Every structure is written in structure tokens, then in C-alpha cells.
Length: 221
Image 1: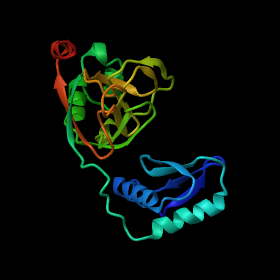
Image 2: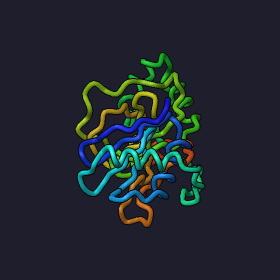
Image 3: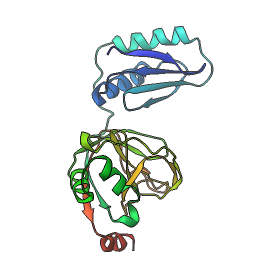
Image 4: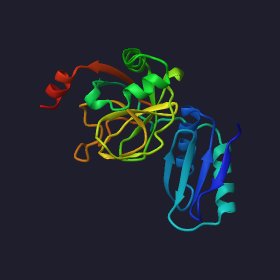
């Protein structure tokens, strides 16, 4: 699809793009390089970019400036950090995976087959949001896709690994959530005291490693 600009209130625009990390990163680089007056934040998402202004704007004028910036020659992504491969240990035991059986039944797999397929996937961080550090990961095997829960939980434990639609993700903090919980990692995905608070960033590759409940407990000590 061609890119599309849509107003978001009176002080922001959303640039909708194809489902492509490369296109999102290229658009972010061009917009940052253009230094459009009044822009306070440029936020990449799964298949879109949010352009936020410090105050209400003339939407048509700003849209024209954005379109001009996007038509300029490609900007080298020098400011984008190199992608990394991060291994995330996950315990899929029932104490950490209240929705594992339901997901397995939905996918017509045994719980062990579900674990094997989920943990053998190759994932990529497509965007970070919802709560600080929450990674939306593409690459979920299509046979593991499952709709979000009809009734969200009021509290999901930090570190919970979950499936929502065609994506998988990790809850970095205890929060409400409607994704299906199939495991938990002992790693601290978000820590405001770290130099880089979020463990994962856009473009990172993620692999899950199956660990036992005993290993999970040792990891936390």
C-alpha cells in the first residue's frame, strides 16, 4: 500500500506504511533529518509512524511538509543502532503459563508442541510501547496465532511471555493486559535505573530459551 497521512487530534499526524520495519525506520530517519518546525516527537510503531507537535497545528500545512520530507533522497540510517540477537530464558511451567493449555487447544497442539514451536521461533522487535519497554515481536509461527482474551486481566505479572493475535510479546512491568500468557522470563525487561532502561529495542532479534522452574528460581536469586 502507498503511505497515508491521517490526523490524530489537532497536534499529531499518523503516517501509515506497509508492514515493513525497513520502511518505518527509513521514514523516521527522513522525518528526523527534515527538522520540521514544531515537531516534539517522532514515534515508530509496527506499521506506522506518529508525528507529534508541541502545540495545535495547521494539519494540511504540516502534512505537506511531511510529504516533502518523505520524497527526499534516502537518508542513511547512521543513527539507528545495529540490531542485536538477544536470548530470553523462558519458563513455560503451568505456574507461569495460565493460558498455555487454552492456546494449545486452540492451535490443535499438545502443550509440549506449542512450547517447542514458540521457543524455536525467530523473532524481531518491531516496536516498543503499551507500557515502558513492552516489545511487540514479529515472527510468531502462524499456527500459534490466537485472539486476545475476551476479558483482559487486571494484573499480569512482570516478565510474562504472551501471544496476542499474530504477535508475541513480554510484559516488562506488572500491568493490566489481554494477551494469552504462556510463560515467564526471569529477566528484567525494563529497569528505570539502567543506562538503557528497556532491554530490547527496535530491530533486535530475539530467541527464547526454555528453562525449568528450578532454573527460573536460581536466576532470580
